[in-house]
Length: 142
Image 1 (spheres, rainbow, N blue to C red):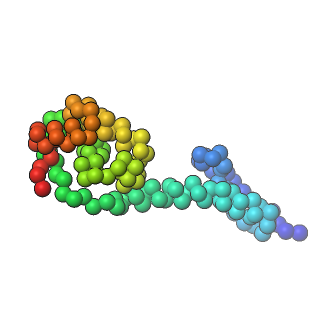
Image 2 (image 1 turned 60 degrees about the horizontal axis):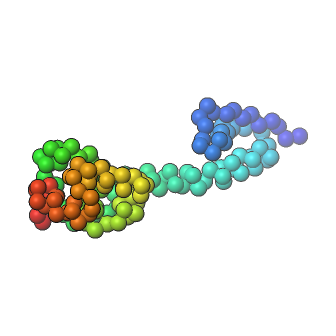
């Protein structure tokens, strides 16, 4: 007879509701191992996505073309770091979707940062934002 397999469940829940199994094998239990393997297969897409986001956040993939912001103007406008990041990529011609990929955030979050920045600049569109950013000295010439 195949021996028993002790399993304990951790207190941490994974978003899918499956609790990971911590296995202490006193003997081989093929059914329990197959069940654990099935659970891991279900988690694989989720874990791959988490890994991808972590890698993107730690290694930005887009070089900047040289848009520089005047720190004093940024502080005066009370722009957040993410608003500055999204404005920089926007000024360099990146789409909201591409900015979202670079910063590892959703497209909706990019749009929200841009709208917040537009509000602080008192503009309503990208062309207005570009013109005003140059006029008030927010961005330095290349």
